[in-house]
Length: 391
Image 1: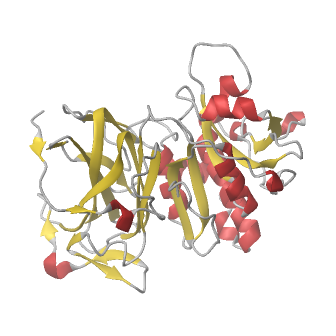
Image 2: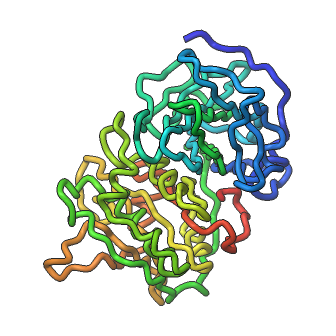
Image 3: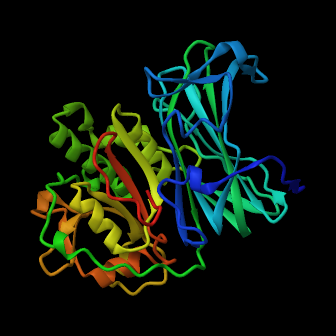
């Protein structure tokens, strides 16, 4: 594909980065989070405006552009955002309210050297999956990068990105509200920081309700929505919000990516959770078990993407992607998790204990997911100090 020369004014990463940035500090992993009027102040808004009543960006007809079919849309587009560190993978997340008749399109670009990649479509999203189908977009590649379902993978390292979203309608009347955009960048070759574990949280076990992925037909494919449903169940009980407790079939239906052909799209799981009012949900990548311990200390369970065979010490060459819910730690510091792959009718439980060494090998490694997690928590919930810029 033809390369695009980089243009536009850069914006300092320290102004946008989710948390304080240390001068000259190179990070293997960083999350950029946009969720307030101030965060979006540097964005170009065409046919869109900040709406304080909705705490998000809504459609503004006076300045809107039109799609080829004639229906107007709103555009939310970031400036060039310098990351301060090189990266070779990008994951974009969003939270939106998409009532029937509305949908969201999310885009990402990366700059390598003097050139920008094409603008990749990260997703077409709506909760009801109609009349426009919810899906990732396959077949996107140029000289710089390739879109691999929920990850933009760079052929060579980049140092800046642009993120954008379109607020779209299938009827010209109903439009989405965009409440959150996050962009996680990762340098897969950079060493991870060493962090001292938080022993004060050892012995803490959050009461996360159990859900079996095997309770529904074809359930062996549904570990991710089962894990998401477990965390939503947890918040339903903790916040006394019964509407957050969803049937597994409903979660599967609300997450399913028709292009990928399943429910394992990381960002579709968090987008689904983010459709519930009052919740923040996004994909990020941690660098250590100590970071999970910080969230457990704040009573927030963490969904972890890992290799199931490595976790269970099964010696195979195949990759075995699996999602589990980290709920706590034993007094000795081993991990306690809810594994959705269990048979309750046989007396089995989702709650399992594994050695920390097996969690690290199955999760932080390249054979795992390079530290991928889902974070789902209430908007106003106290969260840990963002020392490593991962949330």
